Amino acid sequence: MLTCLIALVCALLPAPAQAAAGWQPGSIQQIYDPKGKIYAYAPAAIAQGTTEHYWTCHNTTDGKIKDDIWHTRRTGGKIVSDRRVIASGGTGWDRFHNCDPAVVAVTARFQGVTYKYAMFYLGNDVDASAHNQIGVAFAQSLDGPWVKYPRPVVAFPFEGTTAWGVGQPAVTAVQPDRGRLLLFYTSGGPNGTRAYRRDITLADMSAPVIGPAVEITRAGLTGADGRPDWLNNFDVAYDPSRDRFYVVREQHPYPADHPRQIGASLQVASIDGASIWNGGGSWRVEGVIDPALTGLPRNHNAGLLRTVYGTLPDPGTLTVVFTESCAGTCASLWSYDLWRVTGTLT
Image 1 (spheres, rainbow, N blue to C red):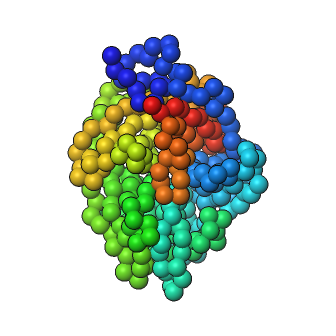
Image 2: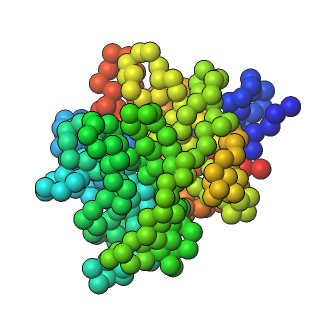
């Protein structure tokens, strides 16, 4: 009988009644609702003791669709700070949308200052879901302020097209005191959508080292229809005790009803470290987050709760922070807010 490392809902075969016991009772909860015509999605989540930090793709002006990055800090389950920390504007490569934050601890020297943290993000220069590139900003505290590096670290690779580009970064530390990180991201262009990772070193931002793109396998991933699926819009955490990388990712195909551009369900999967470093291998499906579990019609754009180094805070549990949306005849964008669920790892 197939078993799931997270004793949640196994996505490969019908789950026995006890499979959902791995979700901790009462762990499904709303954690952030910005109210009004304000959206918040695509969270990066870091735990530090009783404090949790969330960075989200967030509009700033009520009813206006333009992405900034906001930081929400919760202590003891209560929001104690909520503000914009990365803003669009100016004339640069990221002047329109700034979205999809990913935060990690690193030692990086930029413009004569040594920083402790890096935030990777998607940026673009058009009012469209196109021409996306990946940039980085630095801070000496998780609360900021964040200082942008002026150029993309992964540039738009499809010149001459109106393709989606590169974005949705995720990141884990390799040798943070030496500036070395693993950067994961999605690439969408004329030949389809794929996931990649790069070994990068940001110790000296006068000469950052950006390694070659290595494609991440999609083998073993399944869609909501049970068929083989592809990998995009995912977050990553590493568990050194098992030498496994965990992902939470959106499932395809998308639903037929409104909103058609986002998925109803998320899949949790893991893979051995060697497959990430060397390529190849196969994902092991661990669980699914869907309307049957959450009671929400859309469950999308998720992140994993991590340490500042991109590892699991507790090797015995895995917490997913995800975005909800209404469905049907509703203004779905303005319903985006954050929820979380925790599962037991064995």
